[in-house]
Image (cartoon, rainbow, N blue to C red; front, side):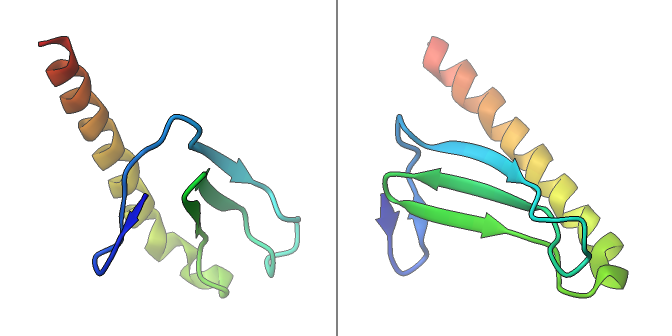
Length: 79
């Protein structure tokens, strides 16, 4: 479910996360896709390959934040 104006995605039972390889050419970098019944979010690196390494930090923060959220949600679900 999308909740405007801040766009909050409430995770649904059919939502999934995949990484899609869009081609070997740098013009078509791999993308992270979060899809579900409510919509589709695609995260991709900038168009310029020389900028990709500057965005790796963000992707690691995204991974770490998702892991932290999963840990908190699991701990609270057990209670």
